[in-house]
Amino acid sequence: MALKRILAVDDEPFNLEIIEEILEDLDFELKMVNSGPECLEVVEEFDPQVILLDVSMPQMSGYDVCRKLKENPNTQKIIVMFVSARGTVEERMESYSVGAEDYIVKPFSHNELKLKLQHLNQVLIEKESLEQQVEDATSTAFNAMANSSEMGQIVNYIEHIGSIDNEHELGKAFLNCLGAFDLQSNVEFRLDNEVLHFSVSGVCSPIVIELFEMLKSKGRLHEFSNRILVNYEMISLLILNMPGQDPDKHGRIRDHICFLVSVTEQQLKAILTKKELLQQQQQLNDAVSKVHSKFTGLIELLNENRINNEAVFKRLQEDLESRIPTMGLDEDQEVFIYQKVDETIQNSVAREESVKGVKAAFKEIENDLSLLLTR
Image 1 (cartoon, one colour):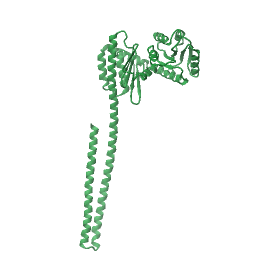
Image 2: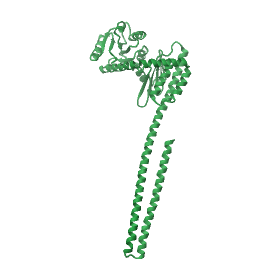
Image 3: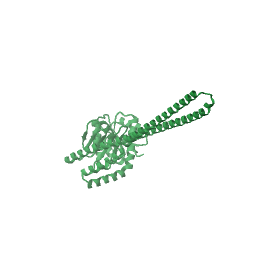
Image 4: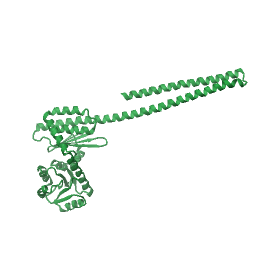
């Protein structure tokens, strides 16, 4: 388990007692302090992986404490979960803008806090396993940025995604393209039956996923601090480090990412459409196979009936030829019987011609279905 040490910060002892009670049966080392300054005093020595940080505290608010933690290279990687009695969109945006990774609203249940910590534990595990990959990917992106112009990167990306036929590969390619612009990004793909998340850090933090959910239908662009969120029908993109000191570059990058989200969404739709068409093609292939099997069985049955009829008429004709002369019939009676037998045989031949017509019709239907499959 990656999560071993938790630091809880709250000016209300009762709230700390609740947290201690919830976590007492879990395998965590828990330390509790009563103020922001005390948190900053003990944090480096205690070295927690997660800090449960109250927002509203005297002397120093949770936002100020979080800023200090994220400004310090020794503590900036610690996951901060804000604990607050309010959970508005504005407060969550403010929490995210100062660097928090998660947010929980008081009063919370035992299970809610435990599930949050279990998820953060998984985030820590995946981050550890992906650190080297992220470092290599970042290095590759920086090299690409140094060797290509911004428009060159966009053109290369558009040419590349044309050959991608998988949603996961498209998400990775999108992140790589954004990385070439030195943009720290989180991406959400909303498909019919699932939602996919991609992040330069390997996994999207819970607060990012909450922002995607809360703002996906609230307009095309949201800008706060040096962050920007771009919403399209199936894709949302959150950039964490928009250039704030260069207005021209900021505007240029904003235009680039809106265009990139647009072309990525079109490719995503093309991938899903192709998958649907392939599925329909397979269903049509299966239907044609079943029709062919049914037609073949029916033709075999008709052929079998024709052969049986021919055998029956042949035996009848032989019996008549051997018995009629011994039956004492006059000539008119014999002629009448032979005429009836001939008429029956002719009718059988006519049915045989109908069978040939049925075969031809079946063959024509099969050919028409085959033409549909090749279009």
